Image (cartoon, rainbow, N blue to C red; front, side, top):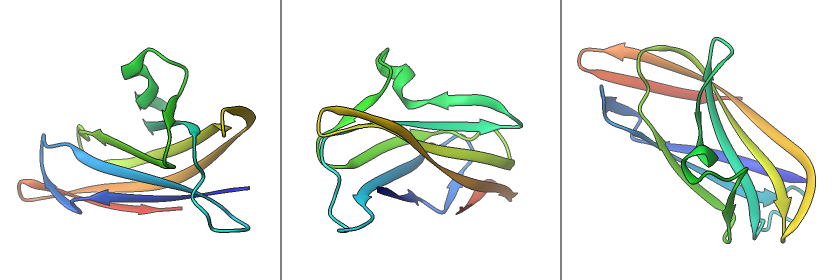
Length: 119
């Protein structure tokens, strides 16, 4: 169905500076970009939701016409986080929700945090 590629920048960032995320959605079978997707990005730690992209828009999801979702988040401290990308609709039609989860390790080094994202 849908493949989610999660990228981020910068890899090392100053404490208190937002980390930027880019989620690219594509179809697994054709590798084509999934246009007009309804999505959400969630960040959690220890089972507690810390961030939900759609909350900033007072909507149940965020619509992306080009299959790319951009977001940012300031990690409050080092530790293990979970980043989830949910797909709730494609081409203006609801779909069975699909969620990709990414284990995220944030470590402290001097005055910077380092981030590593895996599946």
